Image (cartoon, rainbow, N blue to C red):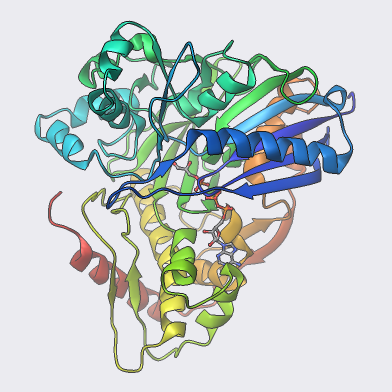
Length: 497
Ligand SMILES: Nc1ncnc2c1ncn2[C@@H]1O[C@H](COP(=O)(O)OP(=O)(O)O)[C@@H](O)[C@H]1O
Ligand SMILES: O=P(O)(O)OC[C@H](O)CO
């Protein structure tokens, strides 16, 4: 196989990373990362400045190339993985967004979603898109922009505006406005895409009043997406996937029944269900895991909005730690005889509750409760929420029981959290050597398209275990702890849904 390098761009919720991989074995050779500002203009609202997304992307790609001493001629392709659902609308002529990006966590369209549910649209939405009606997805965010930015709807009707998720916006900028495209996994998160046929859905667009002229063209995850000149010479963009789907590829979950869970700001578990979409009876999402050579592979997904974000809250909100890495040691110092439960519904609850109005709560406080108990409750909440969604997967498919969970993302650096996760699941948790599986997956897609990387089976054979966490908690303790969590969640639900 020919040699070369692949540049992966991972545009996440809190930071943008670029990793240069040597092909075909995809060994990382240089990394660059930049955080950017989060904007919270109102309660439950979360926005990103589009220029921050673009400028940090450009800066980290340039920095990674400089660190590795590589030029555009050394790079066979760019692979993009991105925070999903986050919504941008821009003017096709100027390339300028009409508003800040509305982030996936943003809840401003909760009332609009409730109205759609009350009007009886849930079944049609689920059948076509695999999704539940929730502010999480892009469609109601686009509608909000068209209805709330002066002149936007008229401009959209005249065909002057373009909609895209973050991949699509970055691709537009990378190609100097020549390519308005996305991939099937990102399209699947908009609530405007029919995942059964792999095309934009006219009835969903009509329901959300989104003109179809705004939509990007949808391609495979490994495809020719155009060429960029912004890095000092021509480099083709050859891979795109939503970050969770890229992680599924990076974890080599290519066979039905394989399962990965990524712990970043939120937590997202995807279970490969093969070549037919499986409708969930337990409020999971049905989504596209990847599309290669025109063939879609589907997944069931459990989405949790707050995982690492609970650790950020310990650090930035409560000031209990200076660095996320301190959270494990602090949690380990908690009194094992008492147990607090943090239900981190800071932006509502996702799977399986889908309660946009719920807000966070902590239960079980006593006079003896201190910082260590808060840290423990925050880290444990991640394990409990994972169990909630794996239980939903088991109930849907009977799959996942005793199955090994492959984990990745920033939070899996915490041994304490991973051990608790194995304990509360009563199942092994496998952490790979390469934890940047999102970037790895994006690089693999671009490498595959470039003809540099081997087929999925050979790529899967190269997956390497760093550490397996095996359950050590007695079953009775596990059941009691989990029952306590379920009680706390019930008390936290808003009663609105
Ligand atoms: N050692 C650690 N222990 C616990 N949490 C951690 C640790 N290191 C990082 N995190 C958490 O992981 C998250 C960052 O993961 P990352 O995959 O970079 O997220 P994202 O892609 O969503 O920006 C942060 O929320 C941070 O608080
Ligand atoms: O940026 P992350 O890693 O928290 O991922 C965000 C998800 O794609 C949202 O659906």
